Image (tube, rainbow, N blue to C red; front, side):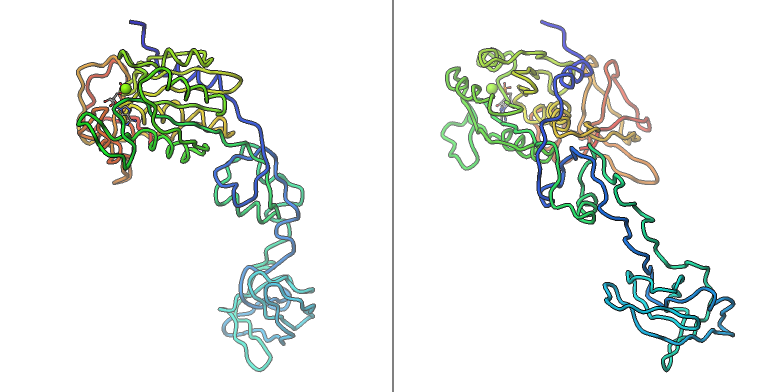
Length: 406
Ligand code: AMP
Ligand code: MG
């Protein structure tokens, strides 16, 4: 049997064969989760004018010097400025304007005294504390200057960035296109959700639904191709559709079984196979190839857990790269093992499903008791992969482990 490929080599090959997709313009409401393909500049200074950071009174600093609880300074009120005001008042010596957060600082004023340190009576306001010049005034341009790049190409658009884009008056932004990703389950035994079981040997297919959702949550545009039987002609018909997509993912039929046709058929549809077996556990049989400029084929294993692990380790970074992300891997942290872990065979790098949580100032990790690749419970009851490196047979309680969060 051919040598199993180390994960690093596989990742290198995948990443060498993938790049960000072309770009497109999207409306702001559709920009979430995308990556900018342009530098975005501010349309104006932010703030656009000096304004109040507090509800209170806009005053001249010179007037309130030395004000205290015992010796309040008395100022006459000349009016009121609320946010968005159309008023045009000015603060002369000995006067004040009542002001609300966000309202422009009136001509002549340079300082805002918060309402808590004042008392208003009969058209006058008593200032009971001194404030430094410029207190509670937000200055024009102190956050951003007009024309300044506020979000660079490659920046991820999260909710905050959507807010920022709106703030600089952008209704449309240029982002990298989402990859079109087809998902297909293969296997004669597979039943669709809702389909009647007619033979005891049939099993409910989880993988094409799982993959569809994993693709969407990674930011890809998933396309559901359903289930194909282990029949070369029919399978070939579906595989031929790979040219319509940026990524084509199959699950099942990629191992050593006689009916595992995917590895042969992909060649007929033009896939240049780059690797087929990895030195990882689960998910040893993973086929990867390219089939034209920046188009990727992944043949993932049929066991649901293997399928998910292979997706997270290899397909996820490919999708993220196409989307224009700079950080393409899932987050890793280091955690303390709370329960010893042993294994007999240490040849492969293992991604043990585990629970990771934060307690007492550090991350703790407990591997799931069920580690077999057909047991989906190990995924739904976990939130991380604990990485067990090649050559490691045992990790003791209290030792640090590397965990990949999912
Ligand atoms: P295979 O890789 O086709 O040999 O399948 C390995 C195991 O995964 C077998 O037990 C299959 O029945 C199971 N399997 C394959 N495809 C799926 C699927 N789409 N959903 C759930 N289990 C599957
Ligand atoms: Mg099969």
